[in-house]
Image 1 (tube, rainbow, N blue to C red):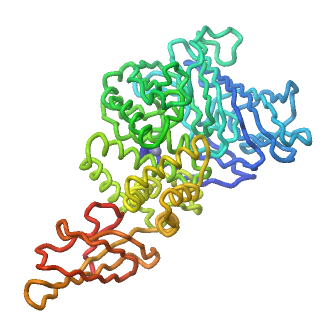
Image 2 (image 1 turned 60 degrees about the horizontal axis):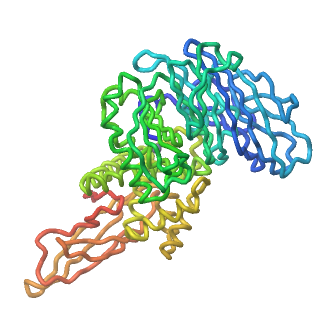
Image 3 (image 1 turned 120 degrees about the vertical axis):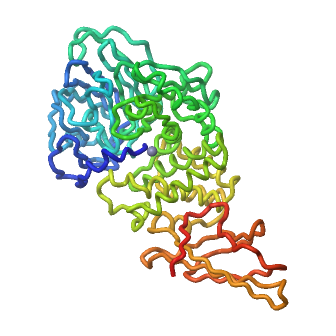
Length: 557
Ligand SMILES: [Zn+2]
């Protein structure tokens, strides 16, 4: 996602793990549920009734769960709404619902079996499904889940590591259109009188997700929308496409007032999908809708239905940078997902870097280099430089939306590209995506693929940049010595000036006097080199002139 800094400061609640969490209040980050490895949701069949004049919803979900151990209790995350009944295989069952977790006793010995749990519920969601007025004063309904707010509107195994397929049946006011993940499996039909939800004049919309997605990605949005087809992308390179031509339909869904304002932001969305398909691999989902919404974030990458903050678009801002970032997330974050939030850089660092790479491809190196330097500066001035990117001590998941996971994570990829060269780097990226599409990963999975592709031991690189804090602060001194007044020796000292709590970095790089470049490796606090020249260079050397290394050049003693 992309951050919207104004709202983040409000979210200061810590996460309490896991069994006896605090009661849940509106807008407060909920605690995590219990994620026994034995619980594996396979499919959610979701039915929702929502209204334009009502502040409550009614839901029914059938969850197909694989039972993988002999635990007698099936835990499901759900909070705030009232449960009517729970049915397993036609039989109403007893359950406990306390502190954000439904606990359903199972008959013994169901290992290896699948269980179909059906939950009927109703109420006014405290969070997760946001019912409210949009920027133009019209009522809307949008899901906004990151990181674990799915449980506020949908009973689920609410953890990124438990992916499942989904289908949605949504009964919504007839003036609204309903968008969701996946493809629209049928045209909207008149809603039966006895369907769940507020009894307004409604249409029933159906969407189906054919590939597994994480619960935080499961969304619906309903509003008065104008839709536009931007174009078709990734033709023949989108295995989940349900179209006969195998293409990905790229659309935007915006409020009627904002159709013209939105156009520049989404103008190149097809080019972006094509570029990422070429660079990373096949487009993972059925279609790609770009949706104006009430998300609290600048953009939220929900699989195949990206939600953007309504304000930027309504104000006529060009949010193309956000669009590229969220589209890159379809590959990284959505299709290849971190199995644990502490490896968030696998989503945000990747989307930050690949989002920028589109502009290198489309607009040239200058645009890209400016973006990289901007993100370098934001790492250097950030408040989290004393923490590593992978920081399992941070218990507030919202605080992981920081400069470590975004720009510094992006820089890790840029440095890896600099180290390995374009050919190996992009081959590794393709291999990693191919290996883990629709699965979950940790950083070591990425490291292994890059090591295998490059044939290099990259442990030092991953350790220093992901598991240790800081960045190199380099001081550079030169001393020319000549015996005959022409030929001579340039003595170079490069000092790592950063505080001792930060590591001494290993930096294979180069130092260049104009185009005369010498390979060096900086790997000590004090590094000394000497180079012979036929004549004295008129300017001092430049370390890493192509900008492959995240660093700050300092002049202080
Ligand atoms: Zn992002």
